[in-house]
Length: 410
Image (cartoon, rainbow, N blue to C red; front, side):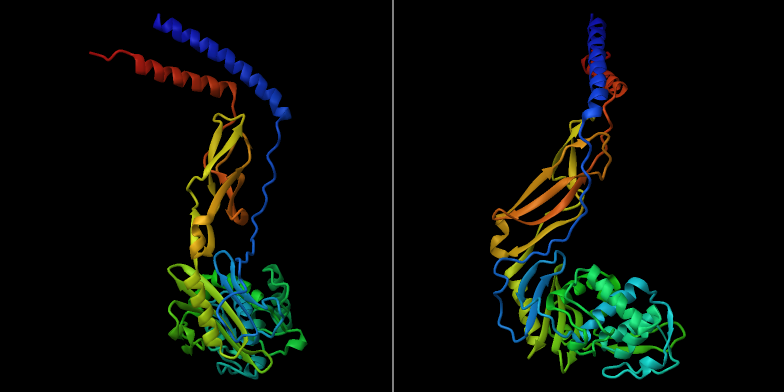
């Protein structure tokens, strides 16, 4: 009697599977196709009240959180100004993106005759690109900048073209470079903004070698059989501000005293930019301290941790767990962290589903306003529903039921 009942159930399930398979083939012609994945985008967000902060003397300034690009304070951040030697941040980015730091560079005539701050290069000397990079960023060597430009691009002029192209690719639309070191005057087409410098620095600090260079106070760089070079950093904040780890000073008569500073406390990194300041050390320190006192990061989701389910059509399961493509973090004032709400906007997926398939977005809102978002992806594979898969699933279910109801063997 037990077997007869189970066989009857199996026949009914088989007929049902045939019906579903037929509908699946018919419905497959009409089912909506998966939407095209929208590429990720960086949203530059300003916190409410970003114009309020500590009193500073700088003509233009920005305080930015490095991970998300959130602007915590801004003063004339879009005003075009001379960058002086903070230009070298862009030079260093290209050196690290396009060069091999082990390459040997023979110094030509032009670097040896460069004016202003130098590391004392002489024609015919041989250094590695790594040694030149340390001299560029720690001691602000204008001669190192020229040597890097000629080595990577063949000429300073071609290197400057690459600088401007890369700046545009990074979203720095109010920036124009005329040289790789910053000696040019602003009216000769060499300018940037406080906001653009923060964006450049954000990219630069994401390169581990750049971060190692700019946080060094004193460094002796030895490269095989080449003479060792010893450099001392011009950034005083590395000695005076807790957590300071970069980035670059700059001074010319046209640009005034400039500083791009960064600090990292417990993984919370801030970037401060002050241009044409009467006291750049005090201004940068005040901005950084203000940022740590008033703001904090809120980690809302991490990769690999499901944040909900996305529906699946014509699959062997009706939904699939989704995970964020990257960490979902927002920077808020300390009193506002409890006001954040995460909302999953999942879209239906058409089987078969593969792990990593785009499945919608996780939206983070504060007071009803979207402040950040992240793509979510399917965490598991879901095969398409077919007759044979349904029959196999039915047989597996029946076998488990039979095994559960079978009397114990004595």
